[in-house]
Length: 175
Image (cartoon, rainbow, N blue to C red; front, side):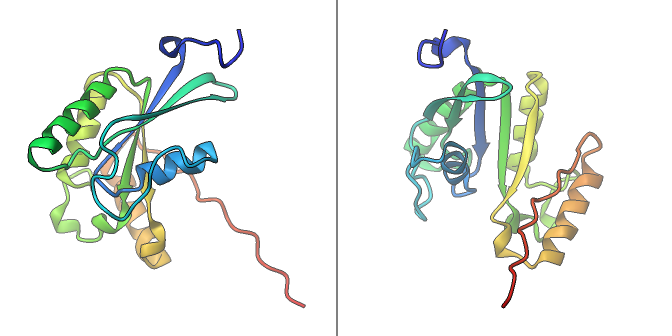
């Protein structure tokens, strides 16, 4: 059975979670290599889950799902959050996307080194037995040393965490 014939329910579901404007849609677009989701500076651009079927080796047929932010506001925001929580029911893996600049002030963070919303989200995923990845996004907003300090603080606050090194850009040759 080819990728196009694999029913949606038989695909491995990878669901992106996080606050509004954390970069979930940008990450989805980068992984798919397409403009799958609309990206904007306006918080709340993603109003419904956006899905993209693709094959990821060696996993096989997958469904990538971008969700609205869990910090949405107002009556419509509550409905968007409900859709996001429904998407959690289909997740085989959760990717929690965090804007790293929100982690600068350690006094505002939980004992896990994360804001309250992300801490609650990780707890919900863990309670359901859904493995998750924490992605620190928008690292270009901080100095390298500041981002490194935040990364270390997160590793100490999350006993089961493992750090993956960021890919190094090749140095340009001069001359």
